[in-house]
Length: 93
Image 1 (cartoon, one colour):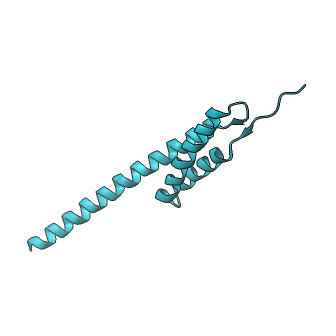
Image 2 (cartoon, helix red, strand yellow):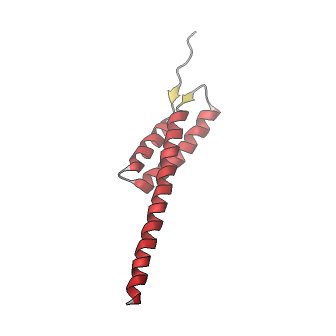
Image 3 (tube, one colour):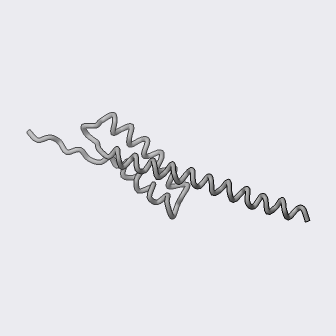
């Protein structure tokens, strides 16, 4: 009797792909998708480890997703502070 092959969870693959897309073309939206699908995939993989694999794929998607969300928020905050400071300096004249 052969052991059934485990398959990579589709949400884990989507999480990794979205995390990669979040690095360059679509930083915030793809990163949110990577985080949500990564958490869903890891939960399902833990519930059925005999059926699914891909925990590492989901984890990589989560790391990329959270990293890009933090970097996007830091960049947005920096831009607001920079341009807000320029507007404040402009009002001094």
